[in-house]
Image 1 (spheres, rainbow, N blue to C red):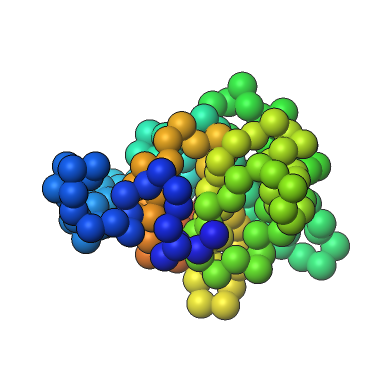
Image 2 (image 1 turned 90 degrees about the vertical axis):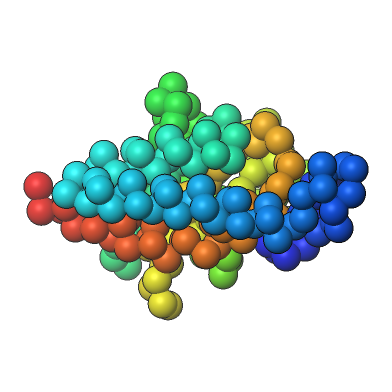
Amino acid sequence: MRASASVPGTHFSRAPDEATGGISAGSEIAAYEYLFSDLVERILSLADQPNACVEYIARELRSLVGARSIFVYECPGSAGDHRHRLVSVLPERRRPLGEDLRLDELAGLTHDYEEARFVSAGPGGRVERILEELGLGDSLAIPLRYGRNRVGVILLLDLLDRANIGAVLESLSNMSSVLALILVFCAIFYWII
């Protein structure tokens, strides 16, 4: 499902009414953009500590979005590489899941995504079936790219709540190129050290 589409149970595409407490979709987006711009400002303060920066991003996204698990993957660097490199996992106890070949496959399947997407487990395509096989629920996939360069993906798995998902998707899509450049910087730092 695309960021602009309505997700059942959300208030993103609805006009102000009692269900949204009089909050319009535009003000929801503005609130999330403010939260995410604050996140970017804090990220910049960690620019000299790339690994800490990726960990910080994962922690903040987990709390802002309400996901049980977050996995940050870097795309394979050369033609000989087939697996994504797992850069960050939250909570750490979920690392074995992050190293499961099916999550690596899921990361690869997101290469066609142009923007953040909401996905649910079920009988749909391969992404949905992988989530179902792993016993995971509603999730978000954020492709990390700058220009035409695909560098990674952030998977936010098992969302706790679908409220405001449209605003979250739009904000994450808007900042994905910044997150992609941070991941590139971290990869450079990783290979230098």
